[in-house]
Amino acid sequence: MHQDVTNEETSVAVLASFSKSPQRSTLSLESGISRTSLRRILATHKWQPYKLQLLQHLNEDDPDRRTEFAEWAKQKLEQDPQFTQKILLSDEANFYVNGEVNKQNHRSWSDTNPHWMDPSKTVGTTKVMVWCGIWGTTIVGPFFINGNLKATGYLKLLHDDVFPSLCTEAGTFPEFFQQDGAPPHYGCQVRAFLDEQFPGKWIGRRGPVEWPPRSPDLTPLDFYLWGHLKAIVYGVKIRDVQHLKLRILDACAGISPAVLLSVCEEWEKRVALTIQHNGQHIEHIL
Image 1 (tube, rainbow, N blue to C red):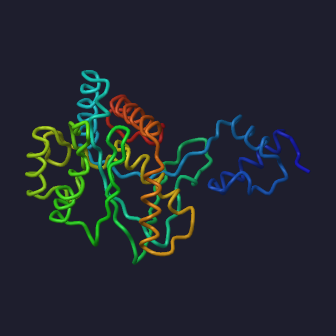
Image 2 (image 1 turned 90 degrees about the vertical axis):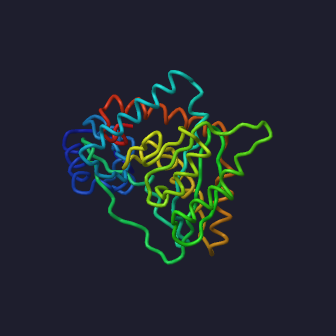
Image 3 (image 1 turned 45 degrees about the vertical axis):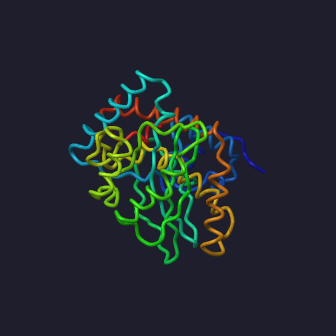
């Protein structure tokens, strides 16, 4: 029978246990103390669970570049409150047939944020590279990429698949297109194509609007979509590549416009926080 106790001796034992093994679940603490008491002790001593984040080291001038982009986005939002509905934000990610640990479940109990970085990387011979975009309350894609992505393949993807899919009956089209600074995105032919499609209105490395490097916390593909998709996709054991693709398609189709609207609001919040924190990473304060 659980003891519902929060005396000093018990508190010391609990904190000592979490200090030794900060990533252990409160459920696995074999102390005979109820979950309610455990959480009360941790809360009393201002300990809280920090989500394991994949952080990239910022170079010396990165905060300035992140602030510059956030200031630009803030200005656009002030001019047009619907601005987040007019950007197509894009990215690619690998999905492995052998699955991947869902890092959303990793928690580290501590009285201060440990800012741990996860050096692990899924290794597998069979994988699928996926391109996806978020355009307001719409998921664009997913589109599957064969082999390693190079500038020529990326250009073909944009020309043959991505942009044709944006044509709607209402005749609307994104006002801005965003991509990160990955090498395939930086090809001369890619940038020339984007200059034609979005003259003066694309965001990326050496684009009309510079995308700040090492900023996964500023794109909803990284801070929301990939983690969400993988949590769903790997909810069952993946049999093969075709099964993996079907799971990804179904997971994308299951995302509602209401959820994507919340994601857009989160992006606006992150823009403001980036300015407030002088361009430093903000994941640890969210």
